[in-house]
Image (cartoon, rainbow, N blue to C red; front, side, top):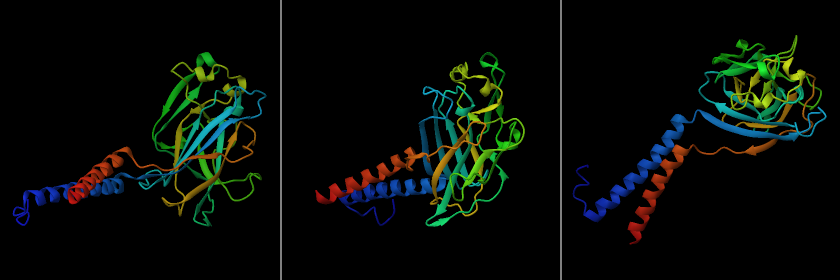
Length: 275
């Protein structure tokens, strides 16, 4: 305690200590957010029960695509996480690419590339010739060039949707592989047990969720991601409508706790003053 505070009355000293606790809690929360918040969510987009055209209603395409600004810059400033929640019957339930637009306010961020993207969390490839022979291989953190088929980010060449789009996609050429499928399922590949040969002949697939990291010049933590489409199957099929935005950024749980400590201190201080 400082010299000036040791002469305070017990009541005043208590008030001073409560105020200090409140200030410390709020300061730590704000500082912690600044120091730890290298990942800023930019949006989550959902595709639900989409008819991928394989003639069935029970094996619709379900997916979520999450975008986040990454200020660490280790693997680029944008992380895109693709989660395939489908139970694939045919290759139509495998995700081939993601189209999206990015902007700062009313100014669009113009697509460029193609450039090889990274795997900030590594990946898992699923391979085999049928349900009973599937195996998994871990792909370490690093370039997606480690996959059987490299993923790239570049400018969309699709005629639909119209406009200027970024295209995150498995590279073309040869037999299509390394599309994003679901996880194996409970360690026994139950998510693939109804798959037909059109799935197996395009393995290995990437077991989602998988995160791709890359750099977009001009992207900021306040940038907007919009008009997200998913490409599926081995043709040029793209979802007919953009995915639905499904969430907004929320504070980290640890930061919420620290803000609560600060808020409690302020409440106690207010009650003491009004007593």
